[in-house]
Image (cartoon, rainbow, N blue to C red; front, side, top):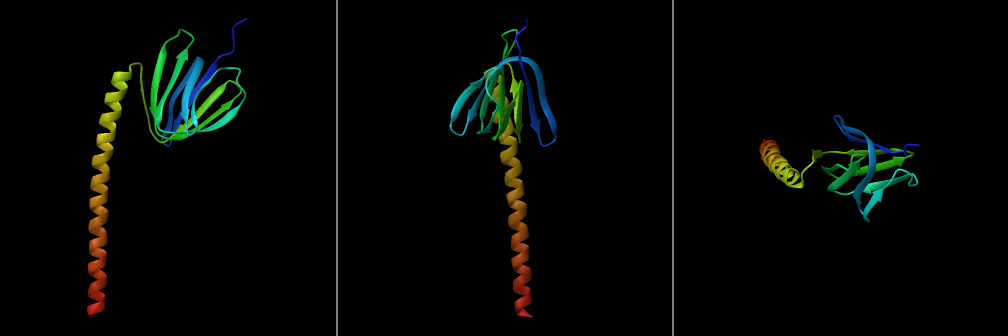
Length: 134
């Protein structure tokens, strides 16, 4: 009899990031430490912190997924993860490079957004001060 294996699904706000079957274990980092989920572990819910999720398939191939904080639900043989951002790789060095590149892009976008907000606030204050002079 073939052992029961895990189905892993990772959800992003825009849709399903990943769906894998025949997973033998999933290791995740929570706000209280990391733990490994096996197929027959009791059902649970955990709050995930930003970090690296690892899992092995039935061919013993290890995969890595960098995730932003999120929520993990283990129900029967399903592990469901909801996160805002995820990047996947079979190689930790490639994952590190992809995460660094992605964070640099986010930092640039945040800087542009902060500059736009500061300009809007300045224009708003100038408009208010113009009302007081009238």
